Amino acid sequence: MKKVLLLAPMSSVHERFNKVNINILKDLQCEIHIAANFEHGTNETIQHNLRYKKQIEYQGIVVHQMPFQRSSLIKNLAVIKICRELFKKEKFDMIHAHTETGGLITRIAMSSNSTTKYVFTPHGMSFYKGSSLKSWMLYYPIEKWICDKMVAVMAMNQEELEVLKKWNKNNERYIHGIGFDVNAIQKTIVNKNVKRAELGIPQESFLILSIGELNENKNHETIIRALAKIKAPNLYYLICGEGHLKSYLEDICNSYNLSNKIIFAGYRRDISEIVHIADLFAFASYHEGLPVSVMEAMAAGLPIVCSKIRGNIDLLEDGKGGYLCKPGDVDSFAEKLNLLIYKEEQRKKMARTNLENIQKFSKDVVYVETNQIYREILM
Image (cartoon, rainbow, N blue to C red; front, top):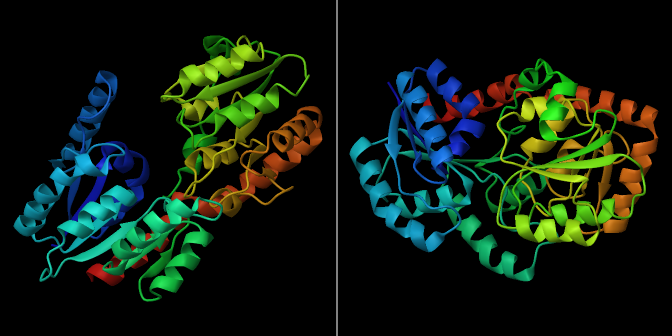
């Protein structure tokens, strides 16, 4: 029986992104191990993570609690020794590391004489077209160094695939994302009136939805400033996510007298329901790998106005399922949002396009792609 470790800093990565990988490894009759921090975050988050830990342990998966820290390389240096000892003790046949932090820690902890085969999924490299010179000078060599010793690196967008081809044509692979559960979204039944009332949204309002952490990258500020330019009556904006910019964004809303029209819903576990009560999805992020939130919106049949960046352009063709704008272009976002607010037939046409196009990113498609890669490595 082959022994495989799936490693990521936070348990949420496994819960959200590794479902298909776990199912494949089960079908291949592998002994599955998972390493992550299940004890990081708020009390509510930790309790949820521990429930997930029990759930996967019940499935026979071996869990390793690791003291990873979010977004802090210095604090994560202590994990290197723990990983090195775990790798040496268990002698895994394959280790699949996720995210830049997971990949870097794994790369440092590798043994030079190990027979373990290493796989890496970046989930969005930190350098990208349009990013700063500093990010290219810092992250480009780090990511290249990480990828150099991997037997396979899984790209989820074409921009990263082209970079990997330049680095090492022997280990680059392309998969259509994480294996998105399209049916889970499309089969979700929700009472629109009840859900809107729960969130404080009037029944007859036009609702624009965004999903993502309240941080600089997700760029909710651009959407808020764009909405300030739109004079449509009964327009509401719902933001699902939490983060350190909440007070800052609330101040912007106050400056435009939009506080009664913009709802900060916090972190939600009912996104599959919320996407069905919106009329349009807005997403102004500066960089992504392949954004799950956009896929959720597509699966729910929402037209989309989003930033013209890596990941988004893999999911959406401008003018087909929605519109693409430069990330910080407030006027462009305002123009496209305003256009779709008043063009119902155009929204319906874009909805049909998204419902069709999302199928290529489904878990069934990604299962086949990833299964082939795992078999090549393990068998």
